[in-house]
Image (cartoon, rainbow, N blue to C red; front, side, top):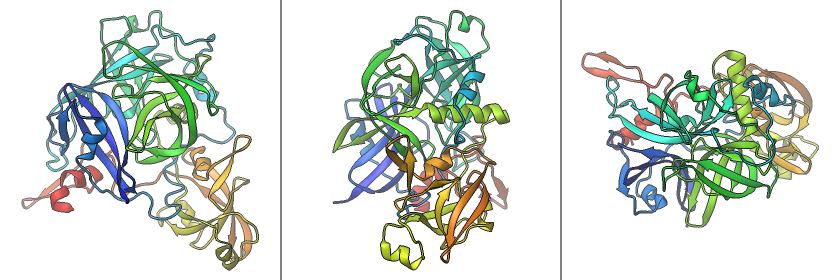
Length: 460
C-alpha cells in the first residue's frame, strides 16, 4: 500500500530527537533526514515532536507528518527549476583556485582541517512575526578551503545569531561569520578573522567526481562522542537527487558510509585524500538502510564561483517550464516528432523569460547542442545518462542558452536567459525575519511554507 514519505530535518537534542518535516509525497514509508546537529535547547515554538533518544530517529519522525505542496505534479514536473548551476565546460578549478586550495599527497590527513561548528539559532515566529522563537544551540562539522574560509551546510547555520568553530585538538572556540548561505544547495561559506585559528592550518583539496564503487570516507563530529569520527563506505549512486533543506534537485552522491546528526558539513574523501564533497543528509526507510548523501564538488565549485563573481550567492537558475516525457510513440506522432527524443512543454511560467520564446505544446529536443532523450535524460560522462535538469544546473544566473525545439512539426532554435525561480509561496524567507503589516487590528504577513506549517490546524 502507498504511504507517506517525507523530508525531515533531524536535530538531536541532548536526550531527545526532533523532526522538522519539509514535504510529503505518496510513496512507501521513507524519509530524508538532514543530520543537522547536536542541539542543546529545542524548546522553541515550532510544532515539532520531542522524543526520548532511545527511540529510533525514523520512528520519531514518523510520529508527525505534514503534507506540503507536491514537487512532482507531473511525470517530469519542475524538471528545470530546482537545479544548481555550474556552467558546462567550465572547470571547477576556477572557483577552487580562488580560495587557495592546494594539492596534497595521498592519504587522508585529519589534523587541523576538520572543525566543529557551534551555532546559536533564533528562528522567527511566523505566526507572530514581530517576535522570535526561543534560542537553541546545535553543533555540526566544517572544513577549511583556504583564504581564511570554511565550508559547512546551510542548515547548520540557519537563523544564526552566533557561530563559533573549534579546531581538532584545540579547546578554544573562535567566532565565525557567515559570508554566504546557499539554501538550494545547502552550503554555507564561513570566515574566521582570528590569525591564531589559522596557524598551522592547511586547506583541503577538491577531487574529481567519483565513480561507482569508489571508496569514500566521511569525517565529522556526529552523535556518540565529542571527538572526531570517521566512517567508510563506497559510492553507491550518482544522480540528480532531492535536497531536503532547499526543496531543490541537484546532483548528489549516494554513499553507504554512516552519516548521523552532527556529520552535516563534514568532508567526504576519496582514497587519494582529496575531498569529493560535503555530507548533508540521509535517507530513512523501513525497506532501506545505509543511504547517505554527499554534495559533490561540482555543486560546491558552482557555489564558490557564484560567490566570487557577484560578491554574494545569487542562486541556481531555472528554465521556467513544466516538462513531460515523450516515451509514447503515439504522442510523438501526434506532435510530429520524427525521432525518439525530446520532452514536451506542458506549462510555461508566465514570469520567466522563456515565456517569450517557448509555448505550451513545444518539444525541446536539444539544450546547447546536447540532445535530450524521450525519457528526459541526457548523456553523462562516458556511458551514463542523467536527468535533463542537470544541464540547467550547470548554468549561472543570467546565462543565455540555445534550445532546439519542434513546434507543429517544424524544427527551430531559440535563445533563452536563465534566472532563478521566484516562488509565490517561498520555502525560506530572505533575511530570516518575515515582514508584516498591522491594519485595524489585523496582521498581514506573506504566505510561506513555514507559516503554513505553524498554522497547520487553521490553514489546513
